[in-house]
Length: 173
Image 1: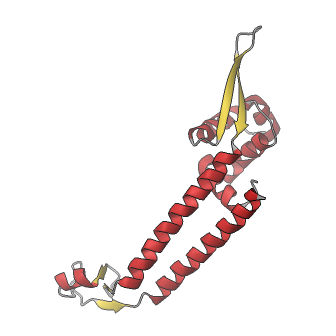
Image 2 (image 1 turned 90 degrees about the vertical axis):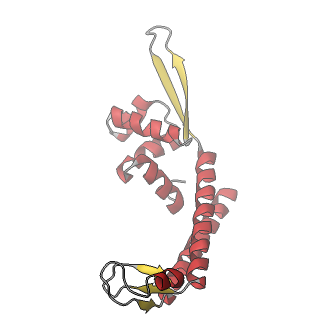
Image 3 (image 1 turned 90 degrees about the horizontal axis):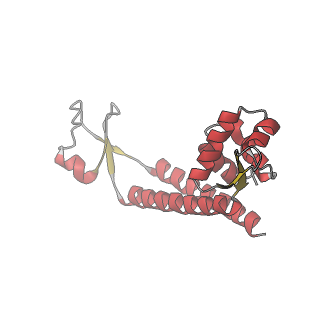
């Protein structure tokens, strides 16, 4: 599961650094306690605990606390919540696609003008309020051809849809 690009991206964001992904892999492999994870991954115990709590805060891991009758110490048994990872990815992908589609619609429906010095980009209505003069430097605004930007957004949408489709095929299989 961790090899999937969407899963890896989500988990890397949560655990802050790709070097902490072995902690997640240990959880997936069934290692339950923070001490055992630290031993298996050779990552400091305090870092393992920090990452486990980050996963917990995101709902990607859960734990059960039990008390050792002899030592009276608490032991935390951790479990990776695969379904929550799937839910996060589905939700994040859907939100990102909505945002991209809104951005695409805005770019396709709006005429833009830019400062030749790169100070500002304004839609037609706002540019008329400034009499097509840059409020930063006073230069005349120029028409901005956003064809390449529109193409890039469309490509991004295709990529996200493709990755999402590939991901859902894997998890639904």
